[in-house]
Length: 391
Image 1 (tube, rainbow, N blue to C red):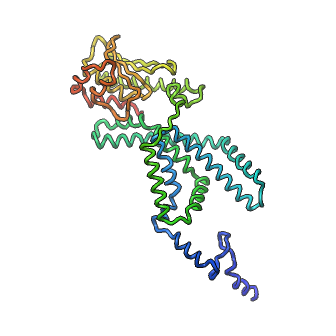
Image 2 (image 1 turned 135 degrees about the vertical axis):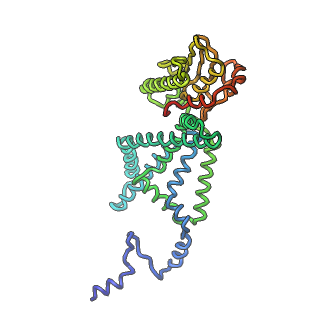
Image 3 (image 1 turned 45 degrees about the vertical axis):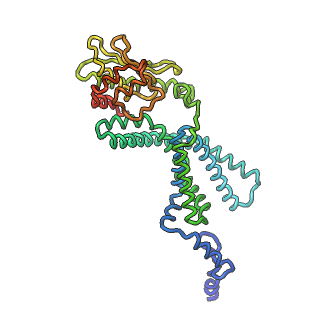
């Protein structure tokens, strides 16, 4: 009986289930604790905000990649490494609390060692590779969907496939950079759980109004940077015909793959332009040229069956819409005579063109006939020949 009475009388002194000391019902800090608990009480929306705070912060942190894709991915990668360091330090402190105090030099050294081991771990790089693939796929789909929705709203369903393709080519890498930044900042599994715990610890005493205001300011600032922030240009990425970000040993291989892709695109365009007539159009490309040389695609019409100017404009528009963005020049020939040369570098290709007059300012000599024949161009045929492959 004595043991039972002792257990009952000592009930209030037992530790709480989470390991912390049980609060005193009438202690000197009871009133203060009650005020603090009342202060941090959150509404349903406040609890939702706290629950999804890491995801919201990751989205906000990824938005500036719309303005500076390459530079901001680098910033997010550095931020992810720094967070890994803080995470390792937190785990180290937890271990030391269990085992006893540690030397102020040993602990930082162990933290650096853990981060270094994590960075050289093959599993880490496999995760990075998987994240890159996911980013490219999601970014490409998102770019296509956004471009398609805009085209559908402004132009209608005709040409929607060409619009999807143009949007993917133009913005897939930018949207992929946003997804990559989100994955770097949000993470998953135990890493995400630790980051969520750190955020809750930092904001648990913050009043709901203050927390909401901070989140709104963060999202607003990120959106402003995405629209009008610095570009954070990384020059070396544009070197070697846009392959400067690759190791030198891989650039030739990737460039050959790009050449094959453009060749397939040209074959698709000429097959569409031919229609029922065999080999009315042929094409060639500057494949296997030096990375410093211009990439030129050439469409050649059969001189024995010369097309009219409207057909020439149709071919130029379809090729301009269809070809990959790294093709810098399109030449249109009848036999061996050049009738039109279009410069593509530095011009947006995020939606298909159907107006031949729009090509005039980008054509050598600005030929007047492009404006004259613009009403005669078959818009539907242009759009059909602008989306002949899944890419």
